[in-house]
Image 1 (cartoon, rainbow, N blue to C red):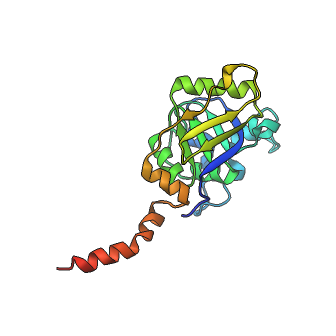
Image 2: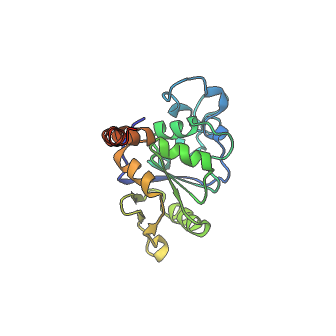
Image 3: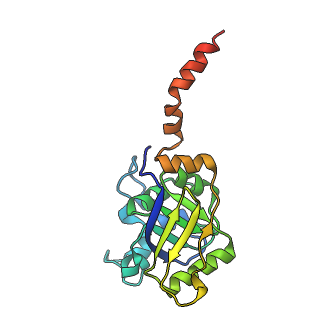
Length: 204
């Protein structure tokens, strides 16, 4: 599956300051009826996002003016629970490209990377500082520079509370896949000429 490449993302940040958000909260199981990856974005965080009558919940962040952006800033242990890939599909289809947390469930991290999402992990102290920065200036424009592996914020604050940039780590292979918009299968398919040549030179 190819996806939109990630190089530099410049966007407002959506802050969902909740720990241990599991995949059923991200996309409830009752919406997992499709056999392909389309149509999940509208049901992202459905049970928080909509009221029982189907109308938008005005108290939920995605329904507020500050709830629009490509970067989601959230609590620790994001994506825990079941291994459903639909959670990554829903986040991507809604428009998120970067998820910032102090920890991700391993399977969710893999699903995110395979589907065009950057799981940007920082330590707990840094996450707390980022939450404070966003709370002080919720409409600030932040930049995630994947090639340089730097996170910066253009906040309009008179103090040093915007002390960024913040460096982040990512596996070099996964980084290259995100930059080129390729998943593991795309990467292997791109090696087909070398594979054919190798096999031709190593036939017994």
